[in-house]
Amino acid sequence: PINERQMAVIEAFRHAWKGYKDFAWGHDELKPLSKSYSEWFGLGLTLIDALDTMWILGLREEFEEARKWVANDLAFDKNVDVNLFESTIRILGGLLSTYHLSGDSLFLEKAKDIGNRLMPAFKTPSKIPYSDVNIGRGTAHPPRWTSDSTVAEVTSIQLEFRELSRLTGDEKYQKAVDEVMKHVHTLSGKNDGLVPMFINTNSGQFTHLGVYTLGARADSYYEYLLKQWIQGGKTENDQLKVAQKQVYDDLRLLEDYMKAIEGVKKHLLQRSQPKKLTFVGELAHGHFSAKMDHLVCFLPGTLALGAHNGLTADHMKLAEALIETCYQMYAQVETGLSPEIVHFNLHAQKGHKDVEIKPADRHNLLRPETVESLFYMYRFTGDKKYQDWGWEILQNFNKYTRVPTGGYTSINNVQNPSNPEPRDKMESFFLGETLKYMFLLFSDDIDLINLDKYVFNTEAHPLPIWVPA
Ligand code: DMJ
Image (cartoon, rainbow, N blue to C red):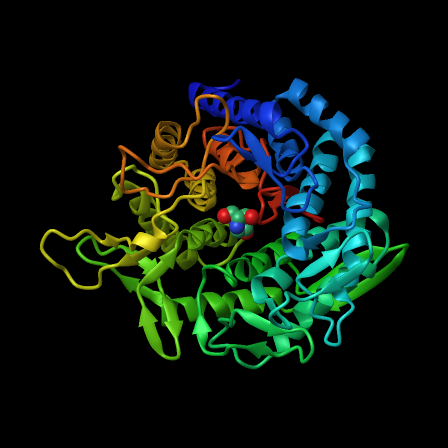
Protein backbone atom coordinates (compact mmCIF):
# COMPACT_ATOMS: atom_id res chain seq x y z
CA PRO A 1 0.00 0.00 0.00
CA ILE A 2 1.21 3.45 -0.92
CA ASN A 3 0.36 6.34 1.41
CA GLU A 4 -0.46 9.93 0.58
CA ARG A 5 3.05 11.27 1.05
CA GLN A 6 4.48 8.53 -1.14
CA MET A 7 1.87 9.46 -3.75
CA ALA A 8 3.18 13.01 -3.62
CA VAL A 9 6.70 11.71 -4.31
CA ILE A 10 5.41 9.71 -7.27
CA GLU A 11 3.69 12.82 -8.56
CA ALA A 12 6.93 14.82 -8.17
CA PHE A 13 8.90 12.10 -9.94
CA ARG A 14 6.39 12.00 -12.81
CA HIS A 15 6.61 15.76 -13.15
CA ALA A 16 10.41 15.65 -13.24
CA TRP A 17 10.32 12.77 -15.70
CA LYS A 18 7.88 14.58 -17.97
CA GLY A 19 10.39 17.43 -18.33
CA TYR A 20 13.23 15.01 -19.01
CA LYS A 21 11.19 13.04 -21.53
CA ASP A 22 9.86 16.03 -23.40
CA PHE A 23 13.07 18.05 -23.64
CA ALA A 24 16.10 15.94 -22.75
CA TRP A 25 15.35 12.31 -23.57
CA GLY A 26 18.56 10.27 -23.83
CA HIS A 27 20.73 13.23 -22.79
CA ASP A 28 22.56 13.76 -19.52
CA GLU A 29 20.61 16.53 -17.77
CA LEU A 30 17.41 18.45 -18.26
CA LYS A 31 17.49 22.24 -18.56
CA PRO A 32 13.86 22.74 -17.57
CA LEU A 33 13.58 26.50 -18.17
CA SER A 34 15.13 26.59 -21.61
CA LYS A 35 13.35 23.31 -22.36
CA SER A 36 16.53 21.69 -23.53
CA TYR A 37 19.41 19.64 -22.13
CA SER A 38 23.07 19.66 -21.23
CA GLU A 39 25.65 16.96 -21.86
CA TRP A 40 28.39 15.95 -19.44
CA PHE A 41 29.40 12.50 -20.68
CA GLY A 42 26.71 12.09 -23.34
CA LEU A 43 25.46 8.84 -21.80
CA GLY A 44 21.87 9.52 -20.77
CA LEU A 45 22.97 10.08 -17.19
CA THR A 46 19.59 11.09 -15.75
CA LEU A 47 17.86 8.16 -17.39
CA ILE A 48 20.34 5.63 -15.98
CA ASP A 49 20.46 7.26 -12.55
CA ALA A 50 16.63 7.10 -12.40
CA LEU A 51 16.11 3.46 -13.48
CA ASP A 52 16.05 1.86 -10.03
CA THR A 53 14.02 4.76 -8.60
CA MET A 54 11.30 3.98 -11.14
CA TRP A 55 11.49 0.32 -10.16
CA ILE A 56 11.17 1.13 -6.45
CA LEU A 57 8.35 3.64 -7.01
CA GLY A 58 6.51 1.02 -9.06
CA LEU A 59 6.53 3.07 -12.28
CA ARG A 60 6.70 0.07 -14.61
CA GLU A 61 5.55 1.83 -17.78
CA GLU A 62 8.19 4.53 -17.47
CA PHE A 63 10.75 1.87 -16.56
CA GLU A 64 10.00 -0.20 -19.67
CA GLU A 65 10.35 2.83 -21.90
CA ALA A 66 13.70 3.67 -20.34
CA ARG A 67 14.81 0.05 -20.63
CA LYS A 68 14.16 0.22 -24.38
CA TRP A 69 16.49 3.20 -24.60
CA VAL A 70 19.18 1.31 -22.69
CA ALA A 71 18.76 -1.71 -24.98
CA ASN A 72 18.72 0.21 -28.27
CA ASP A 73 20.54 3.50 -27.78
CA LEU A 74 22.98 3.34 -24.87
CA ALA A 75 26.45 2.91 -26.37
CA PHE A 76 29.67 3.22 -24.39
CA ASP A 77 31.84 2.93 -27.48
CA LYS A 78 32.29 6.68 -27.63
CA ASN A 79 35.30 8.93 -27.85
CA VAL A 80 34.46 10.79 -24.67
CA ASP A 81 36.24 11.60 -21.41
CA VAL A 82 34.26 10.62 -18.34
CA ASN A 83 35.03 11.15 -14.69
CA LEU A 84 35.83 7.75 -13.14
CA PHE A 85 34.03 8.43 -9.84
CA GLU A 86 30.91 10.05 -11.28
CA SER A 87 30.42 7.40 -13.92
CA THR A 88 31.08 4.59 -11.44
CA ILE A 89 28.59 5.76 -8.82
CA ARG A 90 25.88 6.89 -11.25
CA ILE A 91 26.21 4.57 -14.27
CA LEU A 92 27.92 1.40 -13.05
CA GLY A 93 26.10 1.62 -9.69
CA GLY A 94 22.76 2.38 -11.36
CA LEU A 95 23.06 -0.51 -13.82
CA LEU A 96 24.12 -3.00 -11.14
CA SER A 97 21.28 -2.13 -8.78
CA THR A 98 18.75 -2.18 -11.61
CA TYR A 99 20.05 -5.61 -12.57
CA HIS A 100 19.52 -6.85 -9.01
CA LEU A 101 16.05 -5.39 -8.62
CA SER A 102 14.71 -6.39 -12.04
CA GLY A 103 16.73 -9.56 -12.69
CA ASP A 104 17.12 -8.37 -16.29
CA SER A 105 20.52 -9.42 -17.67
CA LEU A 106 20.59 -6.46 -20.09
CA PHE A 107 21.68 -4.28 -17.19
CA LEU A 108 24.46 -6.65 -16.14
CA GLU A 109 25.80 -6.73 -19.70
CA LYS A 110 25.84 -2.94 -19.81
CA ALA A 111 27.48 -2.81 -16.36
CA LYS A 112 30.25 -5.14 -17.53
CA ASP A 113 30.79 -3.02 -20.61
CA ILE A 114 31.19 0.27 -18.73
CA GLY A 115 33.18 -1.44 -15.94
CA ASN A 116 35.74 -2.73 -18.45
CA ARG A 117 35.98 0.61 -20.17
CA LEU A 118 36.75 2.36 -16.89
CA MET A 119 39.60 0.01 -15.95
CA PRO A 120 42.39 1.93 -17.79
CA ALA A 121 42.06 4.58 -15.05
CA PHE A 122 43.99 2.27 -12.71
CA LYS A 123 47.09 2.12 -14.95
CA THR A 124 49.12 4.71 -13.05
CA PRO A 125 52.56 4.57 -11.43
CA SER A 126 50.98 4.35 -7.96
CA LYS A 127 47.82 2.39 -8.90
CA ILE A 128 45.82 5.29 -7.49
CA PRO A 129 43.45 5.89 -10.42
CA TYR A 130 43.34 8.95 -12.63
CA SER A 131 40.23 11.10 -12.46
CA ASP A 132 39.34 10.82 -16.16
CA VAL A 133 39.00 8.01 -18.68
CA ASN A 134 38.27 8.07 -22.38
CA ILE A 135 35.88 5.12 -22.58
CA GLY A 136 36.16 4.80 -26.35
CA ARG A 137 39.92 4.99 -26.66
CA GLY A 138 40.81 3.20 -23.43
CA THR A 139 43.13 5.94 -22.23
CA ALA A 140 43.12 7.73 -18.89
CA HIS A 141 44.60 10.93 -17.54
CA PRO A 142 44.46 13.32 -14.59
CA PRO A 143 42.86 16.77 -14.90
CA ARG A 144 44.94 19.13 -17.12
CA TRP A 145 46.27 21.23 -14.25
CA THR A 146 47.53 18.53 -11.84
CA SER A 147 48.53 14.89 -11.41
CA ASP A 148 46.44 14.65 -8.24
CA SER A 149 43.20 12.77 -7.80
CA THR A 150 40.54 13.56 -5.21
CA VAL A 151 40.61 11.31 -2.15
CA ALA A 152 36.83 10.82 -1.99
CA GLU A 153 36.78 9.95 -5.68
CA VAL A 154 39.39 7.18 -5.56
CA THR A 155 37.96 5.67 -2.37
CA SER A 156 34.26 5.71 -3.31
CA ILE A 157 34.19 3.39 -6.31
CA GLN A 158 34.82 0.21 -4.32
CA LEU A 159 31.28 -1.04 -3.65
CA GLU A 160 30.54 -1.02 -7.36
CA PHE A 161 33.74 -2.67 -8.68
CA ARG A 162 33.72 -5.27 -5.90
CA GLU A 163 30.16 -6.21 -6.81
CA LEU A 164 31.14 -6.45 -10.48
CA SER A 165 33.84 -8.99 -9.51
CA ARG A 166 31.37 -10.99 -7.48
CA LEU A 167 28.87 -11.11 -10.35
CA THR A 168 31.37 -11.90 -13.10
CA GLY A 169 33.75 -14.13 -11.15
CA ASP A 170 36.60 -11.97 -12.43
CA GLU A 171 38.69 -10.68 -9.56
CA LYS A 172 40.45 -7.90 -11.51
CA TYR A 173 37.92 -5.21 -10.62
CA GLN A 174 37.98 -5.93 -6.91
CA LYS A 175 41.76 -6.21 -6.89
CA ALA A 176 42.17 -2.78 -8.44
CA VAL A 177 39.91 -1.01 -5.95
CA ASP A 178 41.07 -2.97 -2.89
CA GLU A 179 44.62 -1.99 -3.77
CA VAL A 180 43.60 1.66 -3.39
CA MET A 181 42.06 1.07 0.05
CA LYS A 182 45.06 -0.90 1.30
CA HIS A 183 47.41 1.79 0.09
CA VAL A 184 45.40 4.66 1.60
CA HIS A 185 45.30 2.72 4.89
CA THR A 186 49.10 2.87 5.13
CA LEU A 187 49.59 6.53 4.21
CA SER A 188 50.94 9.19 6.51
CA GLY A 189 49.38 12.64 6.56
CA LYS A 190 46.18 11.59 8.34
CA ASN A 191 45.06 13.32 11.48
CA ASP A 192 43.45 10.84 13.88
CA GLY A 193 41.92 8.98 10.95
CA LEU A 194 40.92 12.12 9.04
CA VAL A 195 42.27 12.25 5.49
CA PRO A 196 43.49 15.14 3.31
CA MET A 197 41.52 15.93 0.13
CA PHE A 198 44.09 15.09 -2.58
CA ILE A 199 46.33 12.18 -3.49
CA ASN A 200 49.03 12.08 -6.15
CA THR A 201 48.75 9.48 -8.88
CA ASN A 202 52.54 9.29 -9.39
CA SER A 203 53.80 9.14 -5.82
CA GLY A 204 50.67 7.70 -4.23
CA GLN A 205 51.09 10.20 -1.37
CA PHE A 206 48.54 12.65 -0.01
CA THR A 207 49.13 16.24 -1.14
CA HIS A 208 47.89 19.62 0.16
CA LEU A 209 48.34 18.28 3.66
CA GLY A 210 46.76 19.74 6.76
CA VAL A 211 43.21 20.43 5.58
CA TYR A 212 40.43 18.20 6.91
CA THR A 213 36.74 18.21 6.03
CA LEU A 214 33.82 15.79 5.94
CA GLY A 215 32.49 17.79 2.98
CA ALA A 216 33.49 18.03 -0.69
CA ARG A 217 36.45 15.87 -1.79
CA ALA A 218 36.60 13.75 1.38
CA ASP A 219 32.96 12.92 2.27
CA SER A 220 32.32 9.51 0.78
CA TYR A 221 35.75 8.14 1.82
CA TYR A 222 34.23 7.81 5.31
CA GLU A 223 30.90 6.51 4.00
CA TYR A 224 32.57 3.76 1.94
CA LEU A 225 34.80 2.56 4.79
CA LEU A 226 31.68 1.56 6.69
CA LYS A 227 29.71 0.38 3.68
CA GLN A 228 32.47 -1.87 2.28
CA TRP A 229 32.72 -3.49 5.68
CA ILE A 230 28.95 -4.08 5.64
CA GLN A 231 28.95 -5.27 2.02
CA GLY A 232 31.66 -7.86 2.74
CA GLY A 233 29.81 -9.40 5.69
CA LYS A 234 31.34 -7.31 8.49
CA THR A 235 34.73 -8.95 8.58
CA GLU A 236 38.13 -7.30 8.32
CA ASN A 237 39.37 -10.20 6.24
CA ASP A 238 37.32 -9.56 3.19
CA GLN A 239 36.56 -12.72 1.33
CA LEU A 240 35.82 -13.04 -2.34
CA LYS A 241 34.97 -16.29 -4.09
CA VAL A 242 36.48 -16.20 -7.53
CA ALA A 243 35.97 -19.34 -9.60
CA GLN A 244 36.04 -21.53 -6.49
CA LYS A 245 39.28 -20.18 -5.07
CA GLN A 246 38.93 -17.98 -2.05
CA VAL A 247 40.75 -14.68 -2.08
CA TYR A 248 41.35 -13.02 1.25
CA ASP A 249 42.15 -9.38 1.47
CA ASP A 250 43.32 -7.93 4.69
CA LEU A 251 41.44 -4.68 4.67
CA ARG A 252 41.18 -2.48 7.72
CA LEU A 253 37.92 -0.81 6.87
CA LEU A 254 36.22 -0.86 10.26
CA GLU A 255 39.39 0.12 12.07
CA ASP A 256 39.84 3.12 9.77
CA TYR A 257 36.17 4.07 10.10
CA MET A 258 36.15 3.97 13.91
CA LYS A 259 39.37 5.98 14.05
CA ALA A 260 37.99 8.58 11.68
CA ILE A 261 34.81 9.09 13.71
CA GLU A 262 36.99 9.60 16.80
CA GLY A 263 38.95 12.13 14.72
CA VAL A 264 35.73 13.93 13.83
CA LYS A 265 34.77 14.11 17.49
CA LYS A 266 38.18 15.35 18.54
CA HIS A 267 38.86 17.95 15.84
CA LEU A 268 35.70 18.90 13.96
CA LEU A 269 32.70 18.86 16.30
CA GLN A 270 31.47 22.11 17.81
CA ARG A 271 28.18 23.59 19.01
CA SER A 272 26.58 26.69 17.57
CA GLN A 273 24.76 29.57 19.25
CA PRO A 274 22.03 30.24 20.18
CA LYS A 275 20.48 26.78 19.69
CA LYS A 276 23.58 24.77 20.58
CA LEU A 277 23.41 22.72 17.40
CA THR A 278 26.14 20.11 17.05
CA PHE A 279 27.89 20.58 13.71
CA VAL A 280 30.95 19.29 11.83
CA GLY A 281 33.33 22.09 10.89
CA GLU A 282 36.66 22.04 9.06
CA LEU A 283 40.28 22.19 10.10
CA ALA A 284 42.96 23.98 8.06
CA HIS A 285 46.51 23.90 9.39
CA GLY A 286 45.32 23.83 12.98
CA HIS A 287 42.64 26.51 12.52
CA PHE A 288 39.02 25.52 13.05
CA SER A 289 36.44 26.93 10.65
CA ALA A 290 32.72 26.76 11.49
CA LYS A 291 31.91 25.97 7.86
CA MET A 292 29.76 22.98 6.94
CA ASP A 293 28.86 21.81 3.43
CA HIS A 294 25.38 20.40 2.88
CA LEU A 295 27.28 17.35 1.61
CA VAL A 296 28.27 16.59 5.25
CA CYS A 297 24.63 15.74 5.95
CA PHE A 298 25.30 12.20 4.69
CA LEU A 299 27.03 11.64 8.03
CA PRO A 300 24.06 11.21 10.40
CA GLY A 301 22.70 8.48 8.11
CA THR A 302 26.05 6.72 7.91
CA LEU A 303 26.55 6.90 11.69
CA ALA A 304 23.06 5.48 12.24
CA LEU A 305 23.78 2.67 9.77
CA GLY A 306 26.94 1.82 11.69
CA ALA A 307 25.10 1.76 15.01
CA HIS A 308 22.42 -0.48 13.44
CA ASN A 309 25.25 -2.83 12.45
CA GLY A 310 26.45 -3.18 16.01
CA LEU A 311 28.83 -0.25 16.40
CA THR A 312 28.73 1.86 19.53
CA ALA A 313 25.44 3.49 20.55
CA ASP A 314 27.38 6.77 20.85
CA HIS A 315 27.33 6.95 17.07
CA MET A 316 23.54 6.93 17.16
CA LYS A 317 23.52 9.76 19.68
CA LEU A 318 25.77 11.80 17.44
CA ALA A 319 23.59 10.96 14.43
CA GLU A 320 20.53 12.27 16.29
CA ALA A 321 22.27 15.54 17.08
CA LEU A 322 23.61 16.01 13.55
CA ILE A 323 20.35 15.31 11.73
CA GLU A 324 18.70 18.00 13.84
CA THR A 325 21.42 20.39 12.64
CA CYS A 326 20.92 19.37 9.01
CA TYR A 327 17.20 19.98 9.39
CA GLN A 328 17.90 23.42 10.86
CA MET A 329 20.02 24.19 7.77
CA TYR A 330 16.67 24.08 5.95
CA ALA A 331 14.31 25.38 8.63
CA GLN A 332 16.30 28.53 9.47
CA VAL A 333 16.35 29.70 5.83
CA GLU A 334 13.68 31.86 4.16
CA THR A 335 12.66 29.27 1.53
CA GLY A 336 12.99 26.33 3.92
CA LEU A 337 15.70 24.96 1.61
CA SER A 338 19.33 24.54 2.64
CA PRO A 339 22.13 26.42 0.91
CA GLU A 340 25.18 24.56 -0.40
CA ILE A 341 27.35 25.75 2.50
CA VAL A 342 26.57 27.29 5.89
CA HIS A 343 28.69 28.93 8.57
CA PHE A 344 27.61 28.44 12.17
CA ASN A 345 27.74 31.14 14.79
CA LEU A 346 29.99 30.18 17.67
CA HIS A 347 29.00 33.19 19.79
CA ALA A 348 25.50 34.38 20.58
CA GLN A 349 24.66 37.71 18.94
CA LYS A 350 21.35 39.47 19.28
CA GLY A 351 19.08 38.84 16.30
CA HIS A 352 21.41 36.21 14.78
CA LYS A 353 20.42 32.63 14.06
CA ASP A 354 22.78 29.65 14.28
CA VAL A 355 23.13 29.50 10.52
CA GLU A 356 24.83 32.25 8.47
CA ILE A 357 24.98 32.16 4.68
CA LYS A 358 27.54 33.85 2.42
CA PRO A 359 26.28 35.22 -0.92
CA ALA A 360 28.47 32.79 -2.90
CA ASP A 361 27.02 29.78 -1.03
CA ARG A 362 23.30 30.38 -1.20
CA HIS A 363 22.45 28.02 -4.05
CA ASN A 364 20.61 24.71 -3.74
CA LEU A 365 21.28 21.92 -6.24
CA LEU A 366 18.40 19.64 -5.16
CA ARG A 367 20.92 17.57 -3.21
CA PRO A 368 19.88 14.43 -1.32
CA GLU A 369 22.07 14.17 1.80
CA THR A 370 19.63 15.43 4.44
CA VAL A 371 16.72 13.43 3.05
CA GLU A 372 19.03 10.40 2.86
CA SER A 373 19.89 10.72 6.55
CA LEU A 374 16.25 11.32 7.45
CA PHE A 375 15.45 7.99 5.78
CA TYR A 376 18.03 6.10 7.87
CA MET A 377 16.94 7.86 11.06
CA TYR A 378 13.29 6.98 10.47
CA ARG A 379 14.08 3.37 9.58
CA PHE A 380 16.08 2.85 12.75
CA THR A 381 14.06 4.88 15.27
CA GLY A 382 10.50 4.98 13.89
CA ASP A 383 10.30 8.57 15.11
CA LYS A 384 7.71 10.29 12.90
CA LYS A 385 9.34 13.70 13.27
CA TYR A 386 11.88 12.61 10.65
CA GLN A 387 9.08 11.94 8.16
CA ASP A 388 7.53 15.32 8.98
CA TRP A 389 10.83 17.10 8.35
CA GLY A 390 11.20 15.33 5.00
CA TRP A 391 7.64 16.27 4.11
CA GLU A 392 8.39 19.95 4.76
CA ILE A 393 11.44 19.70 2.51
CA LEU A 394 9.45 18.08 -0.31
CA GLN A 395 6.86 20.83 -0.11
CA ASN A 396 9.55 23.50 -0.33
CA PHE A 397 11.13 21.81 -3.33
CA ASN A 398 7.67 21.92 -4.91
CA LYS A 399 7.19 25.55 -3.99
CA TYR A 400 10.52 26.95 -5.11
CA THR A 401 12.15 24.58 -7.59
CA ARG A 402 9.31 23.09 -9.63
CA VAL A 403 9.08 24.27 -13.23
CA PRO A 404 5.47 24.28 -14.52
CA THR A 405 6.30 22.81 -17.94
CA GLY A 406 8.10 19.83 -16.40
CA GLY A 407 11.13 19.18 -14.26
CA TYR A 408 12.71 20.77 -11.20
CA THR A 409 15.58 23.22 -11.17
CA SER A 410 18.57 24.10 -9.04
CA ILE A 411 18.22 27.62 -7.63
CA ASN A 412 20.73 30.39 -6.93
CA ASN A 413 19.20 31.98 -3.86
CA VAL A 414 17.56 30.06 -1.03
CA GLN A 415 17.15 33.33 0.86
CA ASN A 416 14.78 34.97 -1.56
CA PRO A 417 11.33 33.32 -1.63
CA SER A 418 9.98 35.88 -4.11
CA ASN A 419 12.78 35.14 -6.56
CA PRO A 420 14.91 32.08 -5.78
CA GLU A 421 16.65 32.59 -9.16
CA PRO A 422 16.23 29.31 -11.02
CA ARG A 423 19.48 28.00 -12.50
CA ASP A 424 17.95 25.97 -15.32
CA LYS A 425 19.41 22.60 -14.42
CA MET A 426 18.03 19.40 -12.93
CA GLU A 427 20.88 17.25 -11.60
CA SER A 428 20.58 13.51 -12.22
CA PHE A 429 20.84 12.82 -8.48
CA PHE A 430 17.48 14.53 -7.89
CA LEU A 431 15.85 11.49 -9.53
CA GLY A 432 18.54 8.98 -8.57
CA GLU A 433 18.71 9.94 -4.91
CA THR A 434 16.57 12.75 -3.54
CA LEU A 435 13.17 11.47 -4.66
CA LYS A 436 14.11 7.83 -3.99
CA TYR A 437 15.12 8.54 -0.39
CA MET A 438 11.98 10.68 0.00
CA PHE A 439 9.79 7.74 -1.09
CA LEU A 440 11.61 5.32 1.22
CA LEU A 441 11.43 7.79 4.11
CA PHE A 442 7.65 7.92 3.85
CA SER A 443 7.32 4.12 3.73
CA ASP A 444 6.75 1.93 6.79
CA ASP A 445 7.76 -1.22 4.94
CA ILE A 446 11.24 -2.22 6.11
CA ASP A 447 11.37 -4.74 3.29
CA LEU A 448 11.25 -1.99 0.72
CA ILE A 449 15.04 -2.21 0.33
CA ASN A 450 15.80 -4.03 3.56
CA LEU A 451 18.94 -2.53 5.11
CA ASP A 452 20.11 -5.93 6.33
CA LYS A 453 20.14 -7.16 2.74
CA TYR A 454 21.18 -4.10 0.75
CA VAL A 455 23.73 -1.36 1.10
CA PHE A 456 23.21 1.88 -0.84
CA ASN A 457 26.10 3.18 -2.87
CA THR A 458 26.83 6.90 -2.56
CA GLU A 459 24.39 7.64 -5.41
CA ALA A 460 21.53 5.77 -3.66
CA HIS A 461 21.79 2.63 -5.76
CA PRO A 462 21.16 -0.41 -3.56
CA LEU A 463 23.66 -3.27 -3.92
CA PRO A 464 23.32 -6.62 -2.17
CA ILE A 465 25.15 -7.35 1.08
CA TRP A 466 27.19 -10.46 0.30
CA VAL A 467 26.37 -12.17 3.58
CA PRO A 468 22.94 -10.82 4.55
CA ALA A 469 22.07 -10.74 8.26
C1 DMJ B 1 25.94 12.64 -5.61
O1 DMJ B 1 26.52 12.41 -6.83
C2 DMJ B 1 26.48 11.69 -4.56
O2 DMJ B 1 25.60 11.63 -3.48
C3 DMJ B 1 27.86 12.07 -4.09
O3 DMJ B 1 28.27 11.25 -3.03
C4 DMJ B 1 27.89 13.50 -3.64
N1 DMJ B 1 27.34 14.40 -4.62
C5 DMJ B 1 26.07 14.09 -5.22
C6 DMJ B 1 24.85 14.53 -4.45
O4 DMJ B 1 24.99 15.63 -3.71
